[in-house]
Image (cartoon, rainbow, N blue to C red; front, side, top):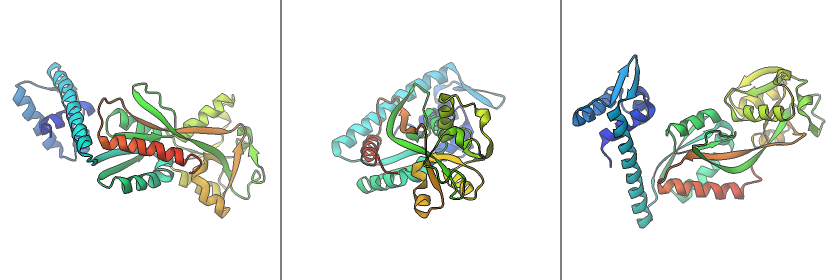
Length: 302
């Protein structure tokens, strides 16, 4: 394995924070500081400037960081090449997913993946779409799966499958007997929405903008952090909402919610997002290919 001091330095340089690096590496902050100081002693120069609780790379630190990046890329290439030669697929993968995807799509996908690749340990982090993209940008996760467009052109974005969104109301709501509704119909009632940064909220905002419906028309009564909480509030008659059809299958069967098609229809892609890396763990390639095939075979499912 590559020099531990170099690993620790590389993590601090990437996050520009000893505290965040310690959390990422599951180390104490003094231990992280000690490893960096050892590397500075080896090179007989400072690698970081520390001022007012902020750090930045010195010229020497920038040079070491560039070489460290190349060293780790070569190590990953070596690791992947040997494992490909021996057919050994194992390791740890950090996956991040937005809330809807983590709750309704990934459990089945990752369960099936584990059956095929039992030696790959997949760890999952859940956040809203903005949070997941931020984790990918900062190399905190290997792969993100999000439900809103990604604007960072330095990342690789690959559509997985399309997700259909519908309006939901309680069975006793005045709109419950309708088959379809427009956004204008919905906005006559208190509206329940996801929090800022949510992919669902962003998609709804874009949908309204395309239809020239001003955001000021929304009578926003609640902002909630998950599909489950939104469904509960709508069931209780506290308002209406727009949500992924995938998330309301149980409620539709139990008749505790009514789903109405939107006119015009609204759909969005679920997308994989990851760094543009020349070399990746073999396990990452296997997971991506497995997920692509899973999405194709479940394109009409949740």
